Image (cartoon, rainbow, N blue to C red; front, top):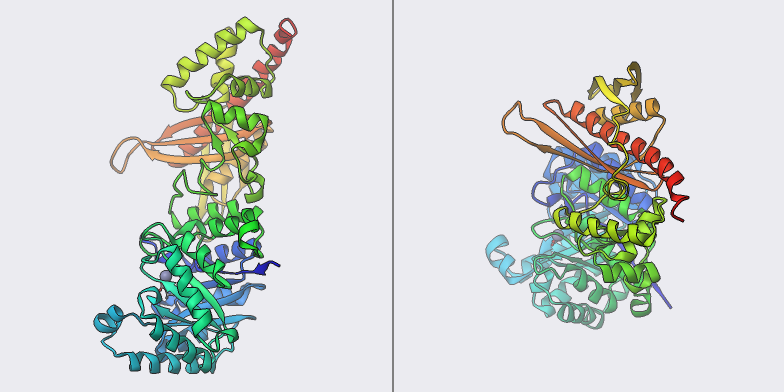
Length: 516
Ligand code: KIV
Ligand code: ZN
């Protein structure tokens, strides 16, 4: 029988404690809406006493979000609990999360309190919070470095006082999976009233063990895990939601546990959190890193092409991605090369193929990734150089906090100019929507990056984009001192490549008949 694990998401509270990440209340609300689509059970919206912005964010989330329980954090102090309760007031389902450190080092140096005082204050805090809310979570901060018998005593007392969830934080990421699992098992065995509360865990990643520790705790009886999208959080971060959820899903045979997460929303959620916090996901990050489903080695590509499960333990579609990607680079083999050419519509004779493969290897030695446009240039170097079908002659955008972002664009094609305008989510989006309307193409924007080429206020900005359209992937580049213009130029550069590719492909189609 499978157990249902409660997913408590703390991206908006502990996640936001990640150095450099700061979210406005509307941004927090946008993430909370996506977390709801993802299917988390609890959203910890913030720490209301910490700032008026955090209190406002929790309130906005409490007013708007239906479905998940909304939680807010408070120290075991009246003013904190009052602030958290006020922010949570509009929520349909709410939870007050109170905490107090219990470890010897925190008692001695941070709180300067003896065990008895900590015990008394914990019980007081739970009782005080209970006046506002039935659903109370208590966290003995630094639980993993607390004497187990004292931890058991505190847990028993707070459950007696009304705590419905007891959360065991590995606050400084000190625990080791076997030991942390044993700590949870000890709690199930030595806290007499533990059946009246859910055991939760909250692991930090200082030794890179936050996910293994969380999973060991689930195996030992924890019913809730606290985690964040992309594993962001204080210092080295918190346990990553996507890694825990996918571990439970992929290794159901081992954990016998499920969650309510719609895993196909994972990638979208990860991108949103990364964009709004500005915290870039490392390319090799499990589940959501750019390389998580990309295969470069020839041996792996050959295996994947024969049977995906040879090198993939989960389907990219399960986490909301379109599919795996065989990256054509210097380690790629002939199988992947031929497969990509055939997806682009080319079937070459033996000698032609040998020559093309040789050229591809030479290019791959110089270039990290070989794109479709490179492949086509290799295959057909007799075709005319890429045409500049569309040329940007004018771009004007309006945007601002109270303005709908709008772009007006003028393009030249075959000596004639034409103009159009459209709105978007931002000025760049408005430009891209306008260009789509004008060119009749609506490619998927896979990547957008802005770099400063020169230094200073008048620096030249370079934008690079990656687009996908009808099975082609192309890159585009644009430079300007105006980043909107650079963005438009990069997009049009990529669009021109798409136009060239389809023209080249149809003219090659005629030649292909000669080389079946
Ligand atoms: O890491 C920690 O101990 C915390 C608690 C407030 C739960 O974030
Ligand atoms: Zn924490």
